[in-house]
Length: 482
Image (cartoon, rainbow, N blue to C red; front, side, top):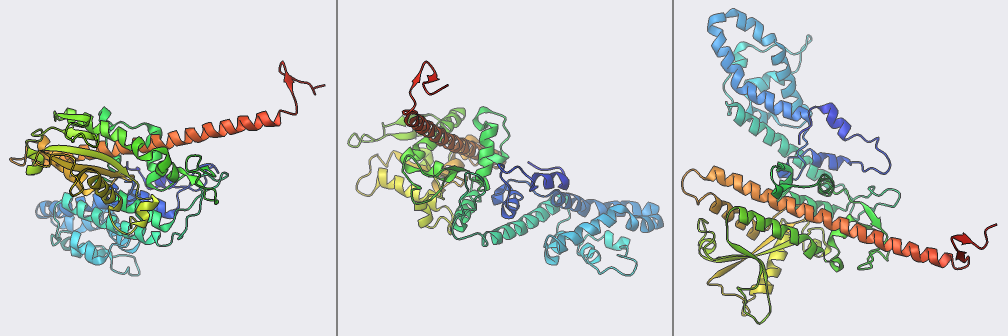
C-alpha cells in the first residue's frame, strides 16, 4: 500500500476536502504512516522508503565498486567518485535522517559506516560541505555490510521513531470525547482512553493483517466499501448516526450515537452478528487443510445443559501439531469477538494493558464451559480453546496459539526445513481471520444504519399522517386546493 512519491502523499493528506468528507488529524496522519505491525496503514512517506532503500544499497555496493575500480583506474577514481551526484545525495539523506527525522548519530553509526556519518554531519565550510575522500567512501567499518540487513535495520529505526512520536501525540487528546454532529458527521474527536485501547489492539498479534492480504482467493476477499470502513475504523474516523439508539435507548442524556455504538450495542446482537462470519471462514480454512471437524456440534457435551460448540475438531485431526494437547485431543474451538472500546473493557483496563478484551472473553468462555466442578465435556478427550478476536485485530493468547499449532500441522510438523513455510501458512491464517472479522464488523455497522433508517422512515410516515389529518385527501387532491 505504498504511495509513490511525496507529492502524491501530500495530496492524500490534504485539508481542502468537502465539508461532508472526513479529514485526517495530525495524529491520524502519523498513524497512517506507521507500518502495519505498529498499528498503521503502511503508508510511510516516500522519502523514508528512498532513504532506507538507497542508503542500504550503498552500504554494500559503494565500497565494492571503489575496491574494484581503484586498481585499474587509480587516480581517476580518487578524483571523480567523491564529486558525483550520488555521493552528494547520500550525504543529504544522512543529514536529513538525523536533523529532520530524529535518527540519532549512534543509530546511524550502527547501521552505516561511521566515517560516512561523520562526513555527512560535519558543519559546512564557506564553500559548503567538503567532498569526502575515497578512503572514507570505501570504509567497510559499518556493522551491517549487506544491503538487505542495512535496509531492514534502517527501516526499523525509522519506524520506531515514528511510533514513539505517534504515541506521544496521543497524550494531547482530550479526556472526554468530542462527538460529531449531524452537520459535520466526521468531525468528532476521540477520547484519550479510546485511542489507547484502539492502538494497543491494532499493534497486537494479528492486528491489521488484512492490509497485508493479497486478494488471491475467496477466503481473503473484501469489498471495496467494506475495506474503506475498516480503514476508517483503524484510524478512529467514526461517523455520526443518530441522537439516540432505538435498541438500548442510549443517548437520551445528550450522548451522540456514532458507528462505535453501532458495533458495540449489546441489545442488538453485536457479538453474535460479528462472530458468525469468522466461524464459517475458519471452517473453510480447515476444509482447505483437510482437518476433520464439525460446525455447531453438541456431541462432546453432556446432555444436561444442551450446549453446542462453534467448531469441534475431531480427536487426532491435528496429528502434526507440536503440543500433545492439540495432537492427541479434539479441539473445542469457541469463536468470539471482543471490542476493546466497549465500556466494560475500558473499565477493566483495555487502554492501559494489552489484550484485556480478548483475555476477558477467554475467561468468560472457560467459566461457561469448564468452570471448576462443572466441566461440561470430557477433558481427557477434548481441549477447550477460545479464539477471541478484538475489533482492531489482536488475537487472544489461546487464539494465537491455535493459529500457530494449525500452521505447524499444515506443514507437517517441526521436522525438516518447514519453519519458513510455516510462517507463510501462519500469515495466511491470520489474514483470513482479520479479513473475516473486519467484513463482519462492516456489515454489522451497515445493518445498524439500515435499521436506523427504517426507524426514521417509520417515524416520518407517522409524522406525515398526523400532520395531514386536518387536511383530508380524496383521489389525490386536497379539499382545500383551489
